[in-house]
Length: 111
Length: 115
Image 1 (tube, each protein chain N blue to C red):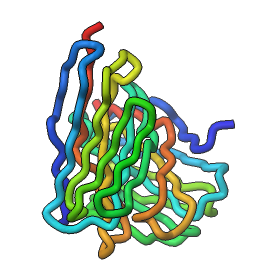
Image 2 (image 1 turned 45 degrees about the vertical axis):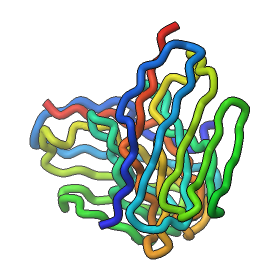
Image 3 (image 1 turned 180 degrees about the horizontal axis):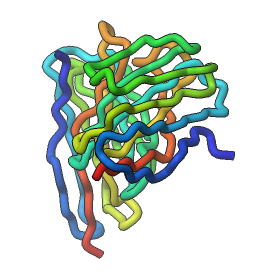
């Protein structure tokens, strides 16, 4: 079946360092969404990418969708303690009626 | 007002029991879902309903039975609970039936512990 691989599984950074998580699919995606789940919380939608090569920014967060629409990344510049949580990509395939969540990257930060 | 609400928040029960989790959304959305998140944080879709009609039924044991009395409610009943059912169950909703392009709004989750 369709799968989306997300790496790394964990990332522990010093506050102020940058952070990146990647999602990769073996088949072309219709679109990709990103969600953030704080510890003890529920996933919250961050953004959706639809176009090939699309780049979107939200303050310190930069989201990219690959040219081939098979991969995506989320980059956080100068992490802050409020960035702690698990970041999930959620891949949509035109042939499917659902989105498939990546395994998530858990970000922890040393103050 | 909470957009997607679930009850109970915590559920601790013995193996073999039957339990239900309830979900309600006040967003006017057409589609609702149940997801299971295990201890490793994997988030897997279980069921999806669009306007009370079942549209996604993943490979889930038939001990799990969803019910949607109306498009604002989606309940999950679990029979003969097993240890492996311990997880956080999230309800979610999305505006339309075109699932793959819609944002999903998650409820706060129900942490189920089976002893």
